[in-house]
Image (cartoon, rainbow over all chains, first blue to last red; front, side, top):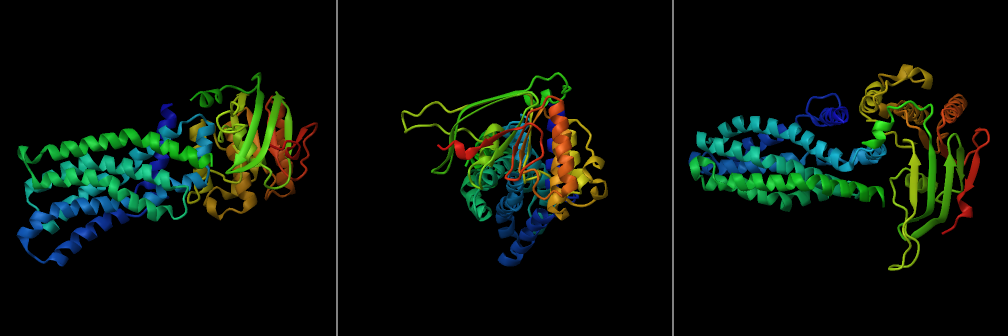
Length: 224
Length: 213
């Protein structure tokens, strides 16, 4: 049981972590930094304006960066019959999806939070704002990972699923964005306002739903 | 988890059997086959035949528990769906190898070896020269051999083989026949879907044309 868990997590991480042999590039990380770098050029060097809008830009950049690996999350394993072989071994699709959510989060979120530091310097954010952004990302990115894996599973059997996946993530991720980034506009309670707690709550709901929605999606592809 | 636990037990003395009843299958709106009953006991082999598109692969997937049997009859008064009951764990070989294309063969097989808790073997499958080659560079026949290696290390009691001869050369086919014979000697049930004749002694044959919906 434990062996199965760690074997699956290890494979998923090797597949998704940047720099691994079969791992993907640092693209989401660089993409995130590129947005943070381009934004000041676009709006001009107005420090006050940048400071007010920078936190929101980091949130949008994080959401977009979490989109990049969606096409590699589920579809290749369905095409290669990996889920079928796991099912034959009595491993529930829900468990496989839950592990993949964890691996997806580990592969993009910690790096993104580290990248927030140079990004905040580029955007001229002050200390309290940076703290709110980092706390908000910690609360919100697990939800983004869960929603991302769910959508990847739902669109895996479709032609042109990747483009659809990008579009589907936007409305589903909007609540996390509203509360996570919204906490910047209303920094009550020392910058850890109710917005972050609400973003965390939405994350928990998404995490709870993802394995079952993703598992059902994989079974429906199999049974079609 | 039950199936995974069963694989740890030695095969000798394992009582295997298959009881499948009232199997009906449709793909989309198209009925494929129906009224199928299948009872196999330890050591038996079954050769599934029939023209392309008759539902050989669908039947194997149904027997593997990957596809639900369809319900027979009109909406509202449909009969209960058929049942598939296996004694003993199940291995499934198909065109899709379930091996990561970007990884060298040794690592790709190593994942399944760790999952199943059995070491991967390369020599018996003629794969020892290919351990460092990424799976996507393998030829069709080499990929089929890799699939067989994955199937063998799973140590499942029973095998479902979908067109196992595809891509295999004469030597590979002889190897497959030896593997099937060894599996049956160990008490396993082997079901082979193939439109080619396969040299398996005293097997039963099931032609899906005789089981229309």
